[in-house]
Image: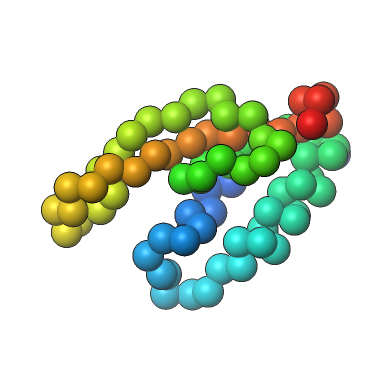
Amino acid sequence: PDAVVYCDPPYASTTGYAHSFDSERFWCGAEEWSKVSEVFVSEATVRPGWEVLWSIERRRDMRTGDGRMSQELLMYKGPHSGS
């Protein structure tokens, strides 16, 4: 309780990772944490009920030279956010 939590999980619906990651399970946990703590999450898509604090367009994959752009967001939800 009363903590500040920052999460940068693997973005949902993006390139796979070496280990599996359950995005829905993560978001269920983040919703619970936000009931008693300030929670900030980096993600590529807007999550209903979360406030977008910041966004930027970035290259999708700098390693391979993929020129496509994607959105990166910083979202917030907490006990006093009104959601």
